[in-house]
Amino acid sequence: MSSKYHQFDRNRLKVLPLSERKSLIDTGLIEAPKPCTEVHPSLKAVAEELAIARDKSSSRILMIGAHVIRSGMQRYIFDLMEKGMINCIAVNGACAIHDFEFALLGQTTECVATYISNGQFGLWNETGLLNDIISQGNAQGLGFGEAVGKYIYEKNLPHSEISLFAKAYELGIPVTVHAGIGYDIIHEHPNCDGAAIGEASYRDFLIFAAQLEQLEHGVIMNFGSAIMAPEIYLKALAMVRNAAASSNPTKTIRNFTTLVCDLHDLPDKVGTEAPKNDAQYYFRPWKTMLVRTVADGGKSYYVRGFHQQTIPQLWTAAEKL
Image 1 (tube, rainbow, N blue to C red):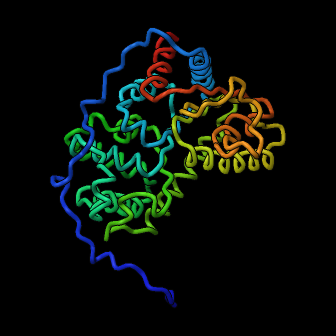
Image 2 (spheres, one colour; image 1 turned 135 degrees about the vertical axis):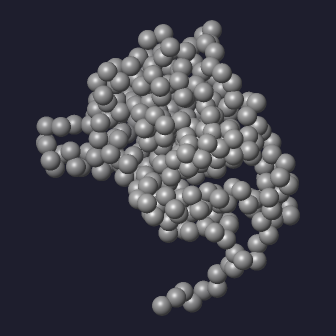
C-alpha cells in the first residue's frame, strides 16, 4: 500500500557541477596548531580531566556542530586525537558535507542568500556523491561516519590530509553522524536513499551509546551544537544508565565532566538551570549537559567564545600535560 499523498518528483531537479558554484571558504583557513598566550581556567581544568580519563581508559568524547569544520580547527583536533585526548567524535550531517567537500575540492560553503533565490542551493553533483558512499557503506554494515571516513582515506582524495573523517578512520576513532532527514543538502538529491541514511545514522547512534558506557570518570564536550549534541547525549545516557543498573546495580555512570563552548551569555555559575520564563531555559546544552545529567556527582564547565578561541586554548592546555 502506498501513500495517498503526492510526493515531489526529484527527477525534475537540475543538479550542477561544483565548478559552477562560488565557494566561500577554502583550506587556507585550516591553520597549524600554535600555543595561546592565555587559557581560560575552565579549559585548563577540562584538559586535566581529559588526561585523567585517558589514563583510566574512560571516554573522551567531542561533539561538534559544522561551524567547527568551517572554522579551520581540524589540525588542533587531529593532535588531540593523536595524544589520546579524544576517542570519539559525534557530529551532525553538515559536518560530513563540509569535510567531504574540503577533502575533494579544498573548498566548501555556498552563499545561501545567493543560491536559494534561484533554487540552486545545495544541488551540486559532487556533493551528492555522499549519498552513494553512505548507501554502499550501509550495505556493508558500516555506520555513516565510518563509511565517509573510509572512502576519503582509501580513495586518498586530493585534500584528504585535512579530513577529520579520514584522520579518525586512520586512527580507529569512531566519528558518529547523527542525521535529521531533510536537514542536509544531500537530501535534496535524486540519489538520496533515506532508508540507508537512517539505518547508517542509527548504527552510529548505537556506536555513540556504546562509547558512553565508559563515561564514568570520563569527559564529554560540546562545541557549538545546540540541538544534536544535547539530545543524542541525553537519550544515549539514559540507555547506558538503564543497562548498567539492570546488569550491575553497583555500577554507576555519574562521575564525569561535561564542557560546553558556545556564544550564549550564560551566568558564571551554570549549575542551576534558567527558569522557564527565561529564553535561556530553552538552550538545551545548559539544562541538559551542564545541569541535569551531572546532578548526581559530575562536574560541568561553560566557556563563552568562538571556536577559533576555545579549541586552540583547550589544545594549549593539553599540550602542557
